[in-house]
Image 1 (cartoon, protein in one colour):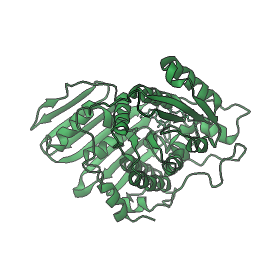
Image 2 (image 1 turned 90 degrees about the vertical axis):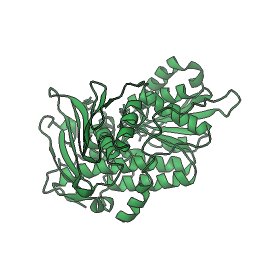
Image 3 (image 1 turned 90 degrees about the horizontal axis):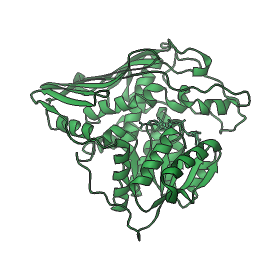
Image 4 (image 1 turned 135 degrees about the vertical axis):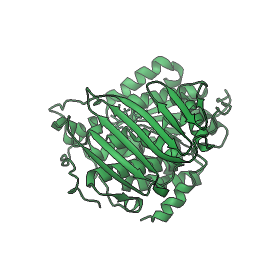
Length: 424
Ligand SMILES: NC(=O)c1ccc[n+]([C@@H]2O[C@H](COP(=O)([O-])OP(=O)(O)OC[C@H]3O[C@@H](n4cnc5c(N)ncnc54)[C@H](O)[C@@H]3O)[C@@H](O)[C@H]2O)c1
């Protein structure tokens, strides 16, 4: 079990690696006589299809060699969409279907694996891919509970020792506007950061009606967002972007403790599993500095994604819907530079770094921001003030206790009641 100190030692290495410089490194595309990079897509849904398109666009000498999923129609749809955009680079693609598809990818000759399944699988899959010696792109979040975050962190350290790359799906870190803004903050444009207020307020995403032939496992996997073992709840699954930007503003330091509220008011039906539909979290950092995260998934309500960072000498506003990044106070500044697609930048830089022989590796940062999100969820579920020490030593492991089988019985956990849900 890691101590707080050991987690800190690892996360301390994150400082300074907050972001690449504000400009793109020179892109080295695969030369015709270079090694052809074989890509495997694991989790062929919406984001996976997007990431595969970006990977195939990023490098001229690569191909989609494998698609892995539990559902054949997902792999077929992704392949159809990708073939329309990259006919030459997809013509040899093979499919692996089933709960063991990841093992087939690990045993294959794939060089780069895109991990875009529901996050509950990320720690196990990342560990397997690192053991198999492959580079990864990991979508956020990378775990749904402390046990998973620790497992991911251990594999992250191994991936560094092995010189492997791990690109992060915290896409705002690849947005040139956000990079330039946080660079200003790091240079002291608003003085010392004292407070962050971040919102991720939106509607309920899709839900798939249960078909009579679906087993418990198939139903939960197809509606993975609504089950905490798979998604981490929407604070960890979706608003984690806001949590990650708060972490960025505080220099990726560990919070001291978190206090939170949350619940389920609008979507209370069985089809929505057992997750909450709103959270409010206050994270306390050193010297009493605080980050406040509000997130909601309730249809028909006000929508917003915004970050307000308050320093001793100024204020920074990042407003998603207005594409605004602005600083006022001691410094008056507004981002006016280019805004290329951040998802493409992610893959351009990653493949360039592989070609240059120095693969980018943000695995530890992925694990750290994910753990901060999990801290907020646990604070809301338990109703306790949860310290970082308690969190990094928490035994919470939400995965089913037996290996996954399609015909296994899986009940739906009770909705967490603060004051009764245990901190383990
Ligand atoms: N960075 C972003 O802006 C962004 C946007 C959307 C989603 N995401 C993240 O991407 C991930 C995927 O989200 P999505 O919207 O594409 O979901 P999705 O449901 O569209 O796709 C998930 C896919 O994984 C497959 N899958 C499930 N379990 C699997 C397993 N054990 N092995 C192999 N395949 C499995 C599903 O069948 C499905 O095809 C999530 O972590 C999500 O948080 C990130």
